Length: 284
Image 1 (tube, rainbow, N blue to C red):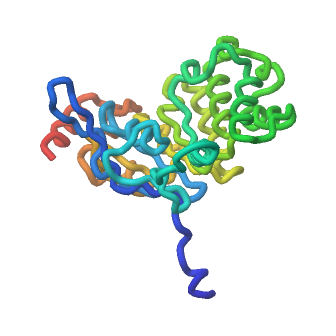
Image 2 (image 1 turned 45 degrees about the vertical axis):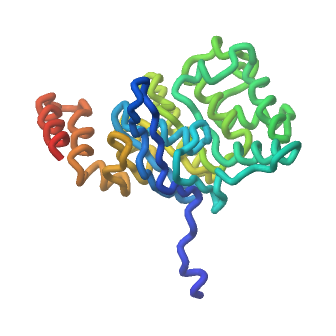
């Protein structure tokens, strides 16, 4: 084996020291993300977990470009996503579209993220046309089939679909442009448990079939355990623990990670354990 063959493959996604703070009405600044760094392999899956206000959704939005970091970088396949685009004209528009194709996002509430006026077929056709892709009926049918939707759903508007079907449509729209990374921000939190399981199975199949990398933002540790290979734990804007999901969730090193695990209801669960875990985490 040659030296070149011995080299590990470069990560697909690199987030390096992402930092974001917001100014409160009184003038004080609160940190939403402080020096957050991680990588995701090609076709890999990363879970970002923490309580509400931990900064995990801010990190997701910085990855996609909905929030501009105060400092730090996001790179896909070695390309800095903050690189300055061409000044004017078609080159600038092409740059923005190429950047959008790298990372796509699926939000928590599919009814909010989908246009209520459009049937599913139109929703996908618009996304395909915007990015210069094949808009034929065959391509649209293939996208719908990929997420388990058929001809009936193709002609339905969001209010005529179930929550799970709408989320499948949102995933199909994100996949329409062949992204390298799919960011899912609490993407199954609003769904019934049985539908959650279907969507998680679907995402795992898509990742294995297409090679798209997943960044799964969630407060639900059971979901993260099921769908991710690596886990990043955030608290008050900082990363307190990260590593292989099995290790982080089975043998956590940080008191805050142990608090999250102690707070998750399960067979034999005692709320007092969560109270004691929070006291230890606050003292750490």
